[in-house]
Image (cartoon, rainbow, N blue to C red; front, side, top):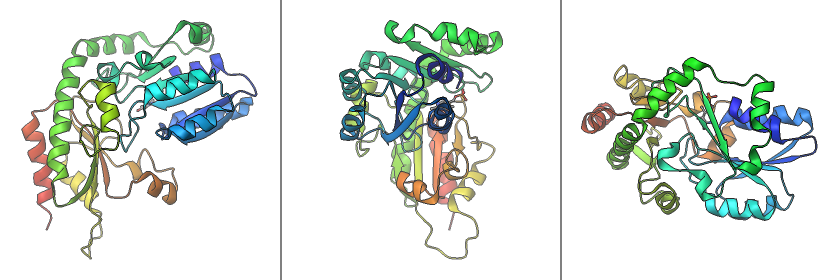
Length: 315
Ligand SMILES: *Cc1c(COP(=O)(O)O)cnc(C)c1O
């Protein structure tokens, strides 16, 4: 979040307008839609994958637009090239949060972004023991960034840098394995009678599969979301998703963060997306029975078997 704060503090001034390609990480949304409005900046949300909405909103010539390479928790994949072309037309700087994709899958500067930020605390560090962010960008967007980082005290801790540098040495290997696991799991879960839908850009049925194929070069990342069927059976006081998560503990732990070497699960409506209203959750397509999975680097067959057996076990 320091990386994003550095962008806000370097590039924006009162009366500037910011475009937020939704869904965005909750804190990113708050930074621009609440904090920066106190500084006289205005913010507008649009759907990240709606190119007509981008064209219409860019007519207001926003200073900055923000979008994520793979959004949470539905794993939408906005078309970065189309968005960056539109941003160039209106003189808008495009910042891409590349946390879910990592530079192994996608390098947004190649697709026309001006700035890229990543939470290295997640997959890049990979061991959940550092808190660090990265920002990189093209020269025309970079002028004030370094000075802002020093002036506002946003500099990184040496220990976190050291830990993350260790993570970098295995990043491509971990990403390869975790992406393979995610694909295996997506395919296995998709066919399960208790599963209504799996969101994974690697599945041909995913609405942005073709864009993901082009932008990510044939790999689709380690993140997927599973929507279990809303239980028709009566007399269950606990949700199926809760029971599934409990049954997987401690092999596959519940954890609101992501990008560990170990596979972890999260429950968006009670964690990352709990501040959304019921209507907003419904619009986003998430429910009590939605479980997000961050695949790790375990043996793939074991992982599938463990998750499927735990689902099979309900009567
Ligand atoms: C976690 C996360 C962040 C914030 O990163 P921190 O390292 O916690 O500051 C920003 N964007 C996305 C997509 C994230 O998942």
